[in-house]
Image (cartoon, rainbow, N blue to C red):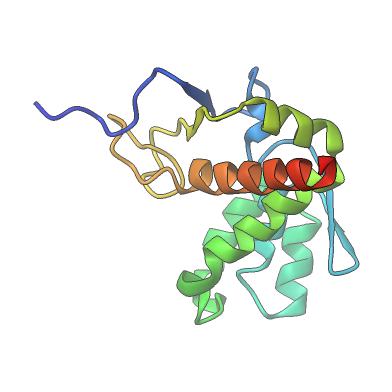
Length: 160
């Protein structure tokens, strides 16, 4: 039997925004200001950016929860921008970077995770999370580790 690619040692698992490490989640209650607009969560921004249509984007932005924003993002799949697959990670990275810059307390916590592997422990999502059995791509965790690396470099250059 093959072993999952994501080990438990030196790792920090997150998923539910109400859990101990939930502050890492795209669903966590940390608004971000991007392009002159306030987005309630990273997930709202990510889902809203699936669309070029201003009405759809605004409906997603104003949705009552990140789960509702995600539902809308999936419901209107036919209206999704054609290049979405190519730009979705860039959109997510931008939102995550701003979350941890605009909420300095979270930025400090992220840097304090040191070199731990950050793992989005979703059993259903094999792209953003690790999926059932731990074989998923964990792209959200990877992007968070990139944000952490960038913040660590900024800390080093500021101290020089």
